Image 1: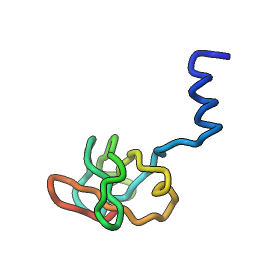
Image 2: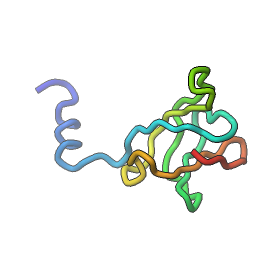
Image 3: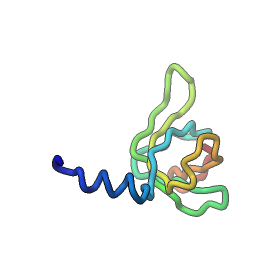
Image 4: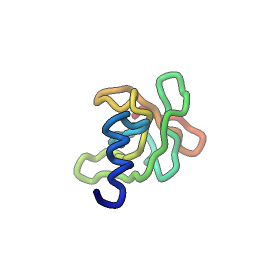
Length: 87
């Protein structure tokens, strides 16, 4: 094997607890460490990066969420400076 192969085999065997997702934030840009929330505003993840997209003319972000919330089209929310925005 190689360094880290045991961890990868474990993920293949048992799955992962978090997955990376892309978000379009309908409000202020979400920055690193902003909380990602489910529809009931329970914390389910965290933003790792975010910025305005000149091409899309929208605010975009990337982050990690609990695996059950990683499906494309899942309605999420992002908490930015004590305000909550759909994502």
